[in-house]
Image 1 (tube, helix red, strand yellow):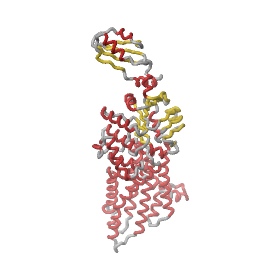
Image 2 (image 1 turned 180 degrees about the horizontal axis):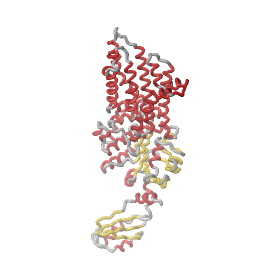
Image 3 (image 1 turned 60 degrees about the horizontal axis):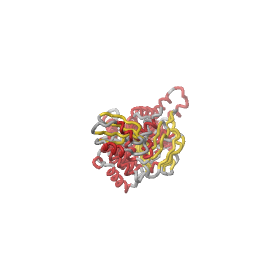
Image 4 (image 1 turned 90 degrees about the vertical axis):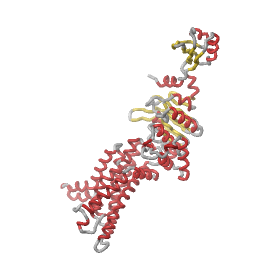
Length: 242
Length: 305
């Protein structure tokens, strides 16, 4: 697993992928937080980071499928998957190596936003007037959301040898699991079941976490999503033996 | 026995790619695996390297079963797949390091074994290039280096010599021959001279079935029912005169004072031909036994209608 993680991560660094992901993320979020008047913290006047945590999921929605789309689709197209499958590493090791490399890139792209936290902390009146617990909870929530999108992304990538198909299907599936359930729950005929349906969506749990309250139910929800998709990816790879 | 294939069958959907084949390879043997396109060579190799599961039957590598002990098999086998897939965005050196680490070569020995492979496969000049920048022949060498970097006991090479220029061909053949002294090598090819040069044994497979499993020298003697010898003289000679030699049954004129003499395969008549012609006061410009013997065998065995 480790050699694969290292290789994948080096592949990000050796190509432009890593720099583009980190750059695009920080620039978009930076623009929304400090420049565009509708969402700017400076215009808004409250020392909080809700702009980051509201916008980041939508940026992730496109960035993460772009990172994950190549993970298996490219290997299948180039035939290098045969190489990996004939090395002494389990299918699960291959999936985890790739998954963790993607997560690592995700964490690194999130790190620069800590500067935003520091800035707001300094700008607060009085100094440090920011809900640090809320921010910490939101970061954990955002990380779990990103990890969920990543698991969806590599699952979609394992289904096809075409990167565009992998990209589009993982954007769709991520969007569906992020806010799709909310829209479905909004349909009029569910009655009392609508709360349950919206609780199936990622957004429901993400919002709960950004209040700074780390509830074990939300944690369980995210871990379940991740485990289901990572394991499904492993099943797809192993299906060649059936 | 280092590789044992037993009653192996592979069915893709409705197509039977391999039909109940069995053979085995001894340690230190170089086995040529021949067959026309689509005969099932690659499929057999993919099963032996744990890439595909067999439909029925078994393959054992050094006593480990490919289905139940895949991890052990993968560590013992070095594999060069047919189209030689490589990570084109990696540097040669980096790529070999990656394979060595995934194969569990301890990090202290990794640099040495990578260096050794680079030397063995003649990649010194190219080691700091990206694989994507290399020509096909060099990529093939990277593939070979990759297959051997963890010092496997068994090497499985699927058409290792495609795309090489004549110099590289000879180098790679010598390399395989050299490696074959210590390791078990199974390799597939279309080129018959290659088999005659490197292999000790040949398995010919056709439409999923083994048609021959024999030593190379036995196959060379098989040769259909006759030997052909080509002679070129400096003066005209009545072709009928060759029929005096015991065993000759046909003499064809190939123009330009050339004759093709067909005789029975049981003894070598070249000395007799020489003596006969020199008694007539005619000089021999060329005297040659035709060497397409294995190709002939191959065609006879695989052109079943």
